[in-house]
Amino acid sequence: MKAMILAAGEGTRLRPLTANHPTPMLEVGGVPLVEQNILWLKRYSVTEIAINLHYKPWAIVHHLGHGRRWGLHLHYSFEEQLWGTAGAVKQLAWYPNERFVLLYGNVYTDLDLASLIAAHQRGGGALTAAIISIDNPSAHHIVELDAQARIRRLAAQPEHDQAFSRLAIAGVFIVEPTLLSEWPANQFLDLERDILPQMLAAGQPVTGHLIRKTLIQVNTPESYQRAQQLAAQHKANLAQAESARQIVAPTVQNVFQRFVFAYPD
Image 1 (cartoon, rainbow, N blue to C red):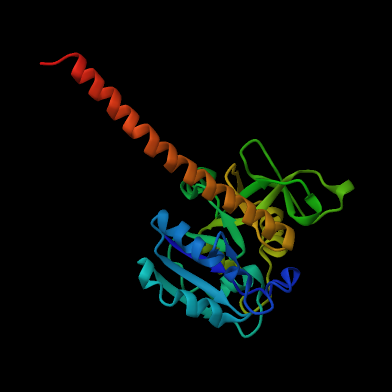
Image 2 (image 1 turned 90 degrees about the vertical axis):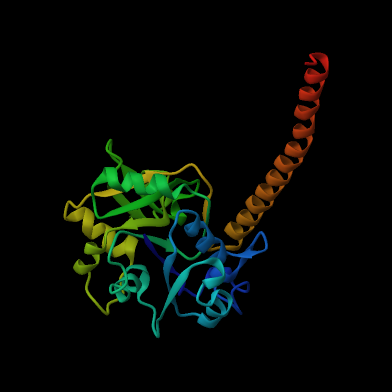
């Protein structure tokens, strides 16, 4: 399975943090987001990844290179102008010849990709979106799901009094390559504002898969701080689990030894 990471944006809401490098190069837990994302994809056997670039592109290229040190094969698409989330994918239409993962480059996540793929297979449509529960609908593209977990309604950053849901598109998708042939070339296209509304209006099924794992789109100082807090908590949990393992193991061994000595051959 292949993947695309969209990493071209300027991250203006994160200034001055993005004054010298793009959002995917922001470190969370000491590791750039883009590196965390390619390693997350690799855990699910995704080893061929295309990344689109525009704003300060060489920061990402210099850090990742060809991806060989991680056992990956990376492709880069340099955009002289921004094409939007869907327009950027269309620029890479030559790349996917199979179902692929589409990931926004500012995402920090540990979601179960296998469960998202399984939901896509059950849904039977050309596109499946990861969905998260949120507190502030006006900062997200919110959706309403039907009983079959298909998106029936979509709104882009509605006012609080017009919000019909607290479920939002999260920036991770499973896409069938045949869908790309329907999109116009060399045109600015946004996935949430252009493509998804068109698909819903045409009656094309779009599955939404609600996830419970961590997923944050790092696009404001507040969301970046939240990602840092979660990374620190995750690191502390791992350290605590390792400490418990080192304590429990000798205890189990001692119990076994006492049993042996109590009942000699």
